[in-house]
Length: 253
Image (cartoon, rainbow, N blue to C red; front, side, top):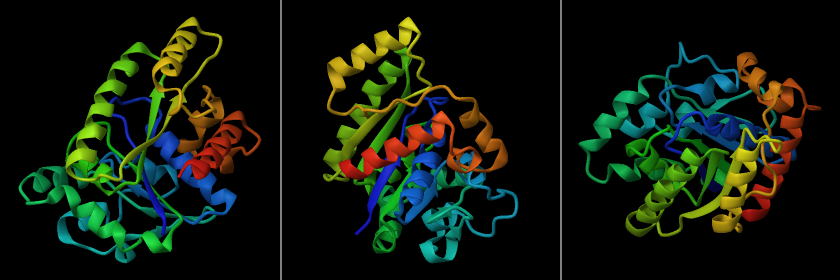
């Protein structure tokens, strides 16, 4: 049975979608069968794997609100072993609708349970908030990966997210664990990066991925081409780093 892993951080601009897309694609490159679930109304994970958001007939919104099946919504991407459940701006309305429904925090879990046997990994890209969409993702997940920048504000956000994960574990999903903390946009030459890394190692040593994601031009370029970085430039540093993270992830869960 496949593992469901959310990529979550309520702080925007930390490389969350970049990490979800590239780890999902890298797992596919390694040989795992992967489903990427775009749970962000911005739909960046959708466009990041080359799928247009404009003319989608069905999205994750139809699953959450209307009870559509995974099989009806899933799209096979042009990348190895990588399928997608897309999202667009219509998902923003779903968050409000879910507030009015009983046990709505479990809608995604119910849908994904039917698909777990078909994939080795289901990767969920959460929105940059701790609202009902993220609660749905964490309630459905076996683990959560927390991408974070080397900034002190990010450390404060990490503490809040850890509290949220603990509450979800207590109330909705006792199997939820923190799979790992992934440091992104890392520059080892900066004193600030060294200081933040020291704090992370002090408090979260066992949770840190051994590979940090460096600032990389090819990583920044790839979304503009609708492609994960491995397929944009497999010789790039970003491609190599995300492959290492994917390998480490597969050894953790």
